[in-house]
Image (cartoon, rainbow, N blue to C red):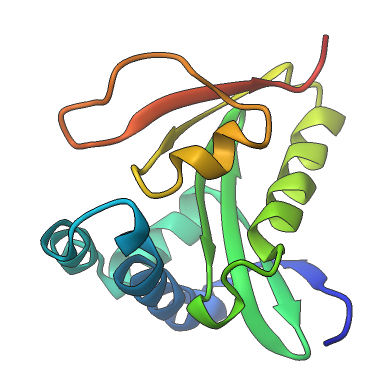
Length: 150
């Protein structure tokens, strides 16, 4: 496998990113949530919702050997989402993409990145220096944050 290529997403990527997010939830989220919860989450997603994300957030894609391996979204000091294609799960794609997004934010002077982690992703973020900043929300998300600048 070659080195990852990172690029900004465009509206032309909407369908591919929607499908990646959906399959990531249905296949990878099961490590931290029930099949029913993952299915309910995935059913809330729509292609038009992905198009809206592409207009509202800065989304970066990680590509490996020409395949979309993952994507992450940021806006201001918020990490809005980070997803890895199931076939690339556990291979460092998510960690590398997170590092790339944090570097962009740090370069823009963001002192602390905030996010809400799903139950299946919380341990991933905690291993990478994030700390829990509050109790689990009614929708099941965990508020987290990480200092980027001291």
